[in-house]
Length: 260
Image (cartoon, rainbow, N blue to C red; front, top):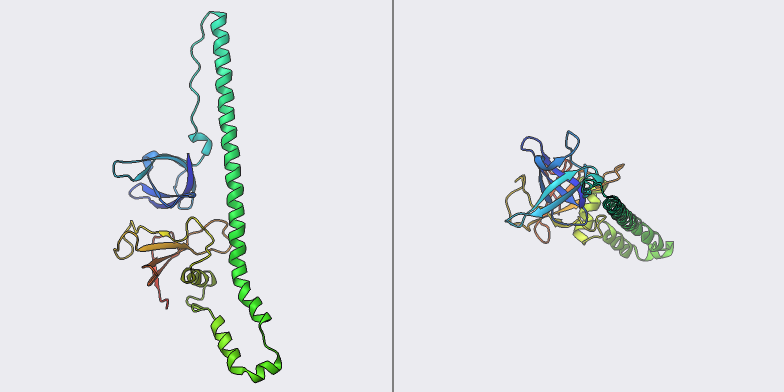
């Protein structure tokens, strides 16, 4: 069983894609394979099984919002016989099956608990790196400020140093999160979502100009007040990037950014 969140959903055509946890490749699913509360929404947490078709594409075989409902269910007990020995054997076998199911479920819960702790730790580290990256230039600026005499004797040197510390993309959009994400892209990170930022954007709906499969890459733009990745992304074209697009609604529409 795998987990993830719904990345794209086409209500009219009855299909969508799942953004898989800890995996770069998205998984296609059809409404006929989904046991989800209606209406189906982008960003919804799901659990699923999948397999590859004859074109080596991942397709979900079962999708649900409840992780326990997708586990294997125990087989029904065999019919009881009149023999006491047979009855005891059946009871013993049933007990073993139940214990096996309990152990398997307990192991599954322990594994998910460990993964949840690991993801939380990674998120904390990424957030710390992100915020330290914002504060570091200020700290360096304060510690490197010259004395009054140095300022008077070397005014030109101070001006050059100040200009060097200015971010190239300050005020491109006026949105601090968008501008910071552009700066991270141009300097190569570090990014808040290690397994997602920088992955290939396949442009399956054709909303962007047609290019080769590895031409576009996507990056997360944090949304204030949202605990998950949110719906905002920057999609770049080229390597290194030469074109930037912003989507604020999970790839439904794009706006081209003028980035130098």
